[in-house]
Amino acid sequence: MGRQERYELIFVDLGDLTSVDTAAEDVVVVHRTESSGPGGHPVYADDTGIVRAEISDRAEVRMIASGGHQVHSSAVTARPVA
Image 1 (cartoon, rainbow, N blue to C red):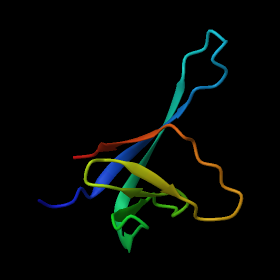
Image 2 (cartoon, rainbow, N blue to C red):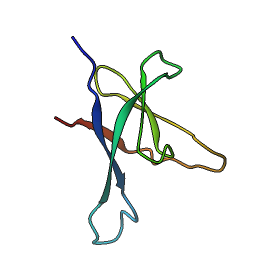
Image 3 (cartoon, one colour):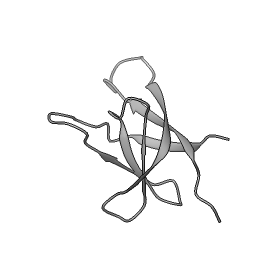
């Protein structure tokens, strides 16, 4: 089975759960790189190289910092792109 070449990373900002606002989503398309992450799975990156994530064959996401002072959302999911 081949690896997926592209994913959409969906970042969910839950915001203030006491407000009437719904959760906001940001979507970033990432493509497979030649690198592997700490878990041995491929690293995917957006075109800028700023957003980087290790994605397992079960679409489990581990965000990878590409620079200092990055704080990643804890609610990130991956969706394959055809």
